[in-house]
Length: 127
Image 1: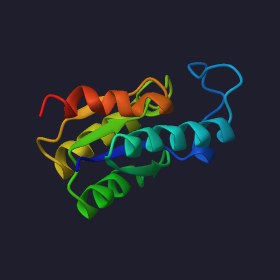
Image 2: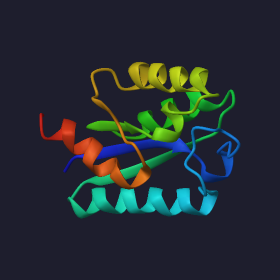
Image 3: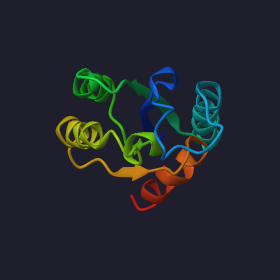
């Protein structure tokens, strides 16, 4: 059974002043979207975990700790992490932590939490 890790900001840690975010988005909608994304992975018969990060100095340790807890077949990095106009450095930290903590593991990108299963499937179906 494939195991997928979704990495994204904890809903309460999102910078809602970021102009790159869709209008009307809030922590509740983000949390609901994450749950939908994880459930869609489980509906495909995959194990799915969420690594909630915060835009601070704990990112690398959080990601590496999660990656050390299980062997993942794919890591999906959430759109909020990679599309933020103000948190490019944090995105780089996430990418490098995945590279160090799970070398050779495919990395996929979602465009919103709900399509995380589709992002992972693009890579899992190639394996």
